[in-house]
Length: 240
Image 1: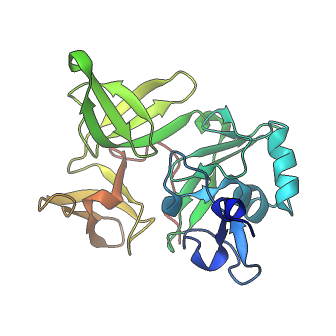
Image 2: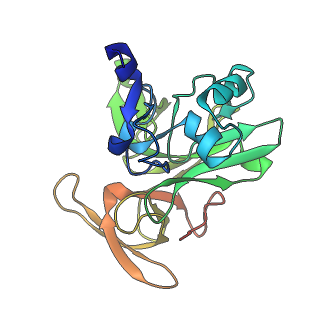
Image 3: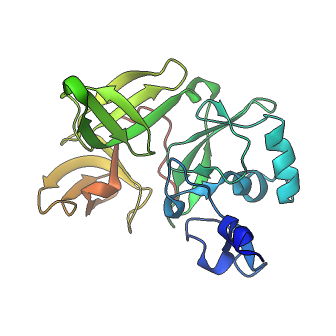
């Protein structure tokens, strides 16, 4: 394989563990293009069509589907099979009237959760940073790399429910006790529960204690996305 080819490919043995692929079947596989999610936290669109949904058996067939504009991600047509998909992304296939949200399972692997059409334009974003622009304008840095304008009522780790079609914030939920959290990483990945305690430590090491109907558990604050107040804003099941 040429150097150019190696830049676009990845050894299966070194592929991120969140990818649900056979690692000994072949030597090489596709590599994500730079995008909204990091390579270690996302799955190429090719795998979604081939391994997850079974709409294609080969990379060539997947590219044919995408080139026809049959697949949307977060409301936009995607034609590159190496497009990275990550947590909370919405996949739409209008021809089959199917809609999915990307979520982690108990092993930390990315899975597809089928959703209703009413949810296809709604996405939960976790605020991961804030930046002051010229004239004091506040920019919110979201978990998938997107940036939108906000104000000082929004804080890091807060959640917004965003309408992808109208490009507007529908709801803002602060990160605080009593809200519903969803764990996206670590040994408690895919679990959800009410936040009962927030322990502030050094930057990046703050912990959160959550309580579900079955148990009480602790995880890092950075691993928790707020998904609602009394109940989830969207259909996000806790699965095994």
